[in-house]
Image (tube, rainbow, N blue to C red):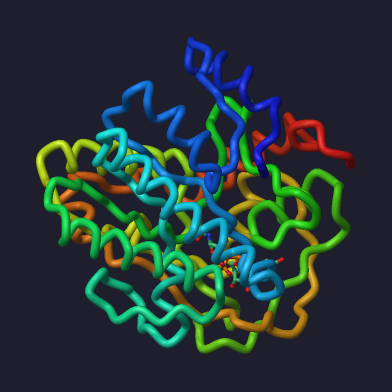
Length: 305
Ligand code: WQD
C-alpha cells in the first residue's frame, strides 16, 4: 500500500466522519468479496500501481496487480450485485505519437507496461459492459494530477525519490532536495521543455463525482478525459511555482528522460458535455496548494527526511 496510515485521521477530520477502512490485497478474492457483501451502490477503483519507470522493471507485477486485481474485483462485484464502476485510467494509454489535444476517439498506443495495463483494463471493462448491459462503467483518463487539498492536511507524498515533476519541485522548495533536473529542453515546444496538462487533484475528485452522477442515468461503458485542456511546459510550471511559493527552484537541464513525449494535453469537450464537469482551478492554485501541503508537512506523512 502506498498511502500512509496517518491519512485516515486527517480524512476523518476533514470529512467529519471516520472513514471505514479495510487494508487488503485487491487480488484476495475472499477479502474483496467479504467487504462487498456489506452492499454498495458503486465502486470507484483506484487500486493499482502507477509508476511508469517501475512498470518497466516489474511488468509482471504491474499486470498482476492492475489487471488480475481488477478481474478479481469485477468477479466479486458481479457476485455481490454491484454493477456500477468508475475506473482510474490514464492519458498514458494515448502513447507518444498522438497529436495534442487528445480526444477519446484517438487510437491508443501505450509505450510502457503501466499504460498497457490501463488499456487492458479499459478493454476488459468495455467487453464486460457489452456482454452484460446492466453494467454502468466509466473509465476516467487522468492527465497529470497535481496539487493538494487546500487545507494542506493531505497531499502527495511519494515513497522515495519522486518520479513526477510537481512533488520533486515541492521537495526542492522545502529543502529536501538540492536541485531539479529538467529532462531536456530540446523538444519541439515553445520553450523546448515538455508540455503537460496538469489538473488540480480537487478538480479530479469532482470529476469522479460527476462520473458517478452520469452513471446514475447511463448504463454501458464510456471513456472520459479528465484534464484542463491547457498545457504548461516544465519551465512555466517552475515559474508559476516560484511565484506561488516565494521559494526558488534551482534546476539544471539534463538529457531527455527515456519514454517522455514532447506534448500532451486533453480535449475536454466530451467530459464537459456528458459529465457537465470542467476543471476550475488554474496552475497558480495547483502550485499554491501543492506548496501549502509541502510547507506544512516537510517530510510528508512522517516519512524519513
Ligand atoms: C511531467 C514533465 C518530464 C520530473 C506521468 C506518468 C503517471 C501519470 C501522470 C497517471 C515531463 C518533466 C519530470 C523531473 C522533469 N499518472 N520532468 N524533471 O511524464 O507526464 O507521466 O503522468 O496516470 O504518473 O505517466 O509526468 O510529472 O513525470 O513529468 O523535467 O524530475 O516534467 O520530462 O515533461 P509524465 P511527470
